[in-house]
Length: 362
Image (cartoon, rainbow, N blue to C red; front, side, top):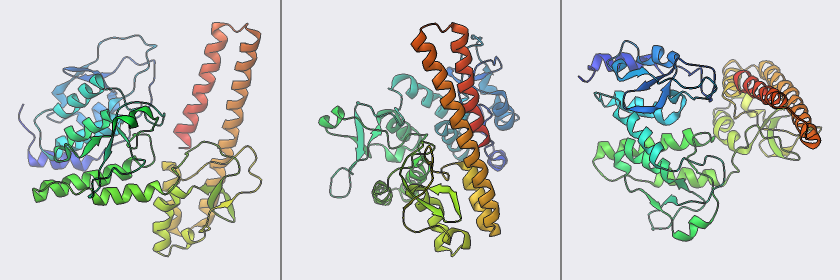
């Protein structure tokens, strides 16, 4: 296969990366595509049309083999590692999609990343200039393999932690669903680019400094409802509660630019009174981050207040629906009389709640 021309690469990069309509495992579709030679990678037709159609890489795809319509499938192009492999494929003018195939092989031959679930396994870490491991920083072997395949200048940078560390439960610091993933990955990419351009070994200190700074801050709990928590918020907009992690990442840079909206947030963590069933961070959400940036740009506190109130109302409404479904499920379990149809109905109700939250409010 002939590599794409420079003009073709520029055109593909200019198209950007459209959002995937199937970012979560979903059933009821028989229109999936796969990469030839990697049947475990599935791509939705929208991503094929929006990204790969009319490119030299289109011939790498074929229709996936038939499967049960009840099987839930996730589009591979909704995952950040596959998207990164695509960007690198374009930047390096690779003639095929080998990087994506290699990532699929890694997924097949390694324990999957445990994500936010604390797990016992062989963990990898990072040594500072004095040879000490960065404390409380663990990466799973699957993610180490992905980094080394996509960014070869970093091979050997992440090393296995002492055997005793494998007996402790940890979360993967580079889990794709974590709030810090993009921040960490950007710094890792920067480290790789500098090492590649200088033809020297990678300098991990900027990344280590970032990690150590973030580890001093409690990681965002996202939409988990917390009672008696401490938050940053604008006193006149108590619905817009922001954790310390997201405040540092999103609000604080605008404070340094003297943004009127950002400077209205309390600088110290404080309790929110009358929180009812609990409070969650509102600014982990991509949607609310966009709202915040618009409010900053337009200096429009009323707009920010209105959007925060809308999201908080939706959160409370969906939480109540969720608790109602759980109560019904417990009653069926206690009676021991629940039919298969009733169980499926409850599962569908929970899925509808989750889909509405993710699609409309996250």
